Length: 104
Image: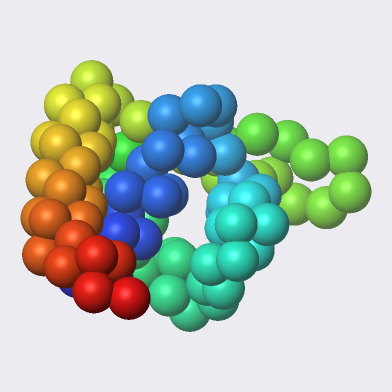
């Protein structure tokens, strides 16, 4: 389940604007989602290989060129499906835990 949630978060970040991996990690950390490069890079590669993401190289003023990720049209459709699944999961959890709130 975490993998799907992480995909949703990463794709949501990239959907807002093209992103460099360290920027993605920073935004995830700001949301209290701690993700390391060893987790992020394989996921980005898998999403790129599935045609959900694309990338391009951009020259950097402080080192080698950087790889920036963009969401593809197919990726936008995939993101919408992930968001719908997430919304359904949240609703199901809220319904199943409703009794906890009323029994307190």
